[in-house]
Structure formats: structure tokens, C-alpha cells
Length: 379
Image (cartoon, rainbow, N blue to C red; front, side, top):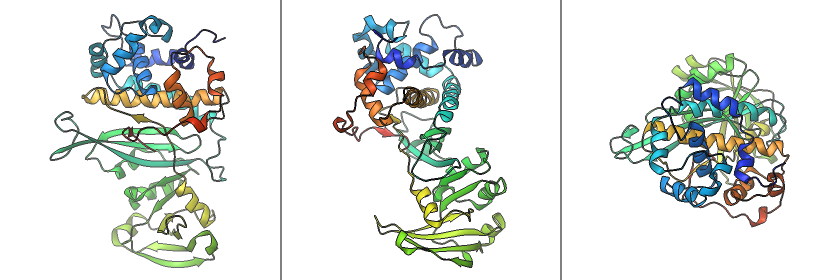
């Protein structure tokens, strides 16, 4: 069926274009646009993300070198860096944010039964914030400190398939704990987060909703032990206690008992303290939940625009490209990891090999790690 089609075109066949057009219409993305449509912009930026381009000029040179194949890539207009720069600057970033959410809605059911290293039926989310440093003179809208600019990428990740389910881009001055106010707790789900999200009043809202959280305790946290439960020290668990908060503000924010687990990591010899409102799972399982770190191959080598709209558009298109590859992985029933698939795709966009045949080749031992100078948004 895909004989003679370019790999990039085969990949983009999995896009729900009807949904994309609805997103464009919703935000009037086609208003006064005579050429270089929003779809052309999306395809150019997705190509840049999947092939690790570093600049607008880089995109222009690569695509113009293959100008005879642009139509077969799905791009209907000539590609010029000024045209692409203008599109990134003025076309509403919400087009691509909404489209990314639509792709996420397709991907999550595909990974509903995916294992992530812990034998648990409930949904498990990892919440994290990444600070992306920027140059203040180039990105004056992203003021962080007196002489520094930054944005923060707040991500809620479903560990089954490593699919981002919620993303929020804020300026660097917004503290990550405020993102808890934007989340709607899912009853029965687990939320794994670091100490930056330790706000007991906000966490109590998750507790009341029937959600569970696992986080790290701070060294100065004041608690009173109620009970001590038996533990198997061979697992690294030192103690498993039921405690109540005794600090004035912390107790006012969270009056219910908490579970405190002290764990010594055998790999690093560090002693960690975990807090959770779940009293059912074994203590070692709680520590394993926290150690389940995600691997999301969402890397941006450089931002192609300096405006807030351009930065947001690029990030959301990068998310769309990543989730699209995750969808293709499941639809084609590929055993290779997303990292392997992304590396293969980055070198084969202009090949005419059927996608399933290309990606079923076992070349994982030949794949080398990506250069460390790439910006890893969350990993």
C-alpha cells in the first residue's frame, strides 16, 4: 500500500487531518493565508523536530535540496525561512496545542495495558517541571530574574507509554506548586511528584478526591509517629510509619494521617524519605513507584523564533510529533523503543521503504546516544 511513498509521508498518513482542520478553523488559522497553510507549517516543523534541525536556515536548505519531493511530503508551498518564521510568530499556538491534545486522546487508549515496571492496575502519573533557560536580550517576554530569562514546562505524564497528558508553559517566575491548582484529580490514580510540589493544602484536595500521591519529604518536616509497621530491610526499606503532621500550617492544610517510608537506595547509598496517603500498597512498591522515571525523547536543539507564540507553537508541534510516533508504534505493533524509532526516522525521511518494514529491523545495538547539547524538555 505504501510502495513508492516517502517515509515522512507514510508517517503523516496517521494524522487525523479532519481534526487538524477543525483546530485551524477554531482559531482562524487560515485567515488571509494565500499560500503556506497551517498544515504546511506543521509539516515543516514536524520534519525539523524529527530530523533534529537546528535553525530556520537549516530547515530551508534541507527541504529546498529535496524540492522535487516536497509535494510527496505533503507540503504544497515553497519553503522559505522568512515565511516559516512569520507563520510561527503570528499563527495562534493554540491550533497546535489543541491538535496535540487530540493526538494524546488517540494515543492513551493504545497504551492502556502497557507495563511500566510496577505491577499495578491503577493509572500512574508523573508530575514534573523543567526550567528552560533563555537569553533575556533575545526573549524579553520570558523574564525570570534580573539578568536572566526562562520558561517552565510543567508536564503530567502517564507512565503507561510515557504519554504527556497535561502540559502547561509558564514564565520562569511561576512556582511549580501552582500547577496543582490546574489539575483535576482522578479518583484512584497515583501522582508521583518531587519535593517542589510539597504543599499540603493542595495535596489534601487530591486526598479528598480519592487520588493517591507519592512525594519526597523535606528534612525539616515536623511529624509525630502514630504506628510503625513491619518491614523487610533486605529491600532497602528502613521503616514504614503512620504519622501526623505537627507543624502549624502543615497540620491545618492536611489533618489526615500520612504514611512515611524511609528507604536506603542500594545503588546510591542515599537515604530517602517518601510521603504518601496510600496505606495499602507494600512499602517497597511505593519506593519503586517513585523510582519509575520516564524516558520521553522530546528534544529541541534550538528555538526557531523568539516570540512567545513561536516558542509555544514549536513546543506543541514537538509534542505532536512525539505522540504521533508513539501512535504509529502501537498501530504497527513495533517492538523497538520510541528512542530507536526516532533515531531511525531521523535518517530515513526521504527513503521509500514501507514504514513497517523499516522499523521492524533490529538495529538497536548500532544506535548511538544523541548529542548531549540537545535540550531535553523532560526525561
